[in-house]
Amino acid sequence: MGTEKGTTYLLSSFFFSIILTIVCQRTVKAQSLPPAKHDGFLYTNHRVDSDTIMIEAFFDPVCPDSRDAWPPLKQAIHHYGSRVSLIVHLLPLPYHDYAFSTSRALHIVNLLNPSATFRLLESFFDYQGRFYNAQTSNKSRDTVVDEIIKLAAETVGNSYYSAIESGFNDRKTDLKTRISFKYSASRGVFGTPTFYINGFAVPDSGSAIDYKQWRSFIDPLLQAQSRKRDDLPHLSL
Image (cartoon, rainbow, N blue to C red; front, side, top):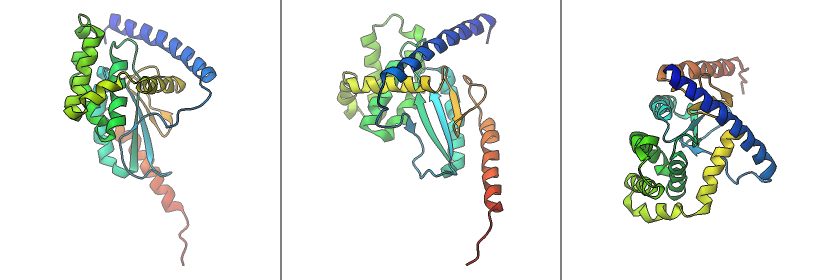
């Protein structure tokens, strides 16, 4: 990262952290009831118990670092199987022009067909250049949103086109996307990707973590669990 780019990123992060603090404070005051469902998309569909390693990832669909962080994280999740669970939270960053709209599309698709949510996330990562800042500067918002709807329909099935289009006129999907943003604020997250393991922040937020690093985080936790089980007294019947 160059000096000028690094300075710009630090200033953006600083001002964004101030905005998040204000949003978080207002959320606590204005939102008397929590949402009916926990925020986030569950990637792993298996039983979760007290021994399951819980990973939380905060992604922006049009963030290049989020895109780069996904393949090694996905590889680690598949490696560990039922011993690890993953929830992905969306944090649409304000300096990525269509982060909110792409995040909203993911909420819409998750309501229509939850099994297609991560396929769409991967499509946004694959075609990120189409929705990233300069590439949309000469297009109207309606044009870009229509392109987002078309990509979503192509990914999950063209029969969903009308439903996805209608979802962008449904206030509920707008609120779901706002709740994701507020949830991130309540956790003190101001950049993507950010990761938590068992509720604790992973170092080096804002950067992709490679597969070896994931193994270095998770292997010791599983080994500690194994030693703990071995130390338990064995009861004979």
